[in-house]
Amino acid sequence: MRIRADTGSCVASGLCAYTAPEVFGQRAEDGVVVVLVQEAPEEHRTAVHRAVADCPVQVLSVDEGRDPEESVMAPYKAVLTGGPAHLPEDLRIQHVADLAETVKLPFGSGYEHFAHHGGYRTVDGERIPEFRWVGRTALAE
Ligand code: SF4
Image 1 (cartoon, rainbow, N blue to C red):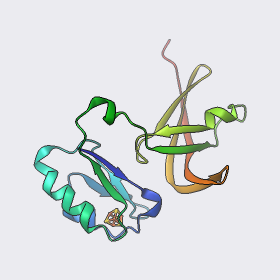
Image 2 (image 1 turned 45 degrees about the vertical axis):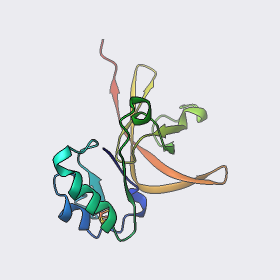
Image 3 (image 1 turned 30 degrees about the vertical axis):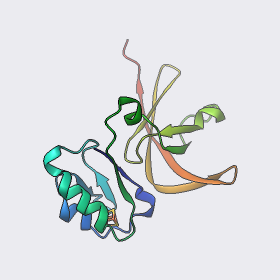
Image 4 (image 1 turned 90 degrees about the vertical axis):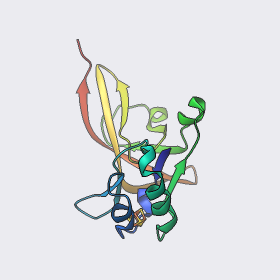
C-alpha cells in the first residue's frame, strides 16, 4: 500500500494525523500533511483508508498495487527551481512518485536536492508542483 498526498492542496485540518498517527504527520510550521512512511504496514491499513476517506479536501490516495512495475510509476511531473544557474532546462522537469519525496539529481560532481514546499508553477500551460533547491551533496570519492 503506497500512500500519496498532494501537499499543495492540503488545508492542514490534521484529521489524517489524528486518524493514523503512525502514517501521517503535520509540518510544524504550517500543519500541512507529511507522509511519514511511504509504504504503510498492513496493521495500519484500516486507519489509512479511513484517513483517506475522511480528508475534507480529498488530497490523500493509496495505491494498492502489488506489481513492482506499478510501484515505481511516477505520477507527478514536477519543476525544479533554484540551485545551480547552469542546470540545463530539460533537467528541471522531472517525474516524481510522491510530493513528499526529495528529488536527488546527479549533476556535476555531486547531487542537487529539491523538495516540494506546497507551491506550483505553470509550465507550458500546465500547473505542476514546484520543487525548490534545498542543498547539494558531493559524490563519494
Ligand atoms: S486530512 Fe487532508 S486536509 Fe487535513 S491535514 Fe490531512 S491531508 Fe491535509
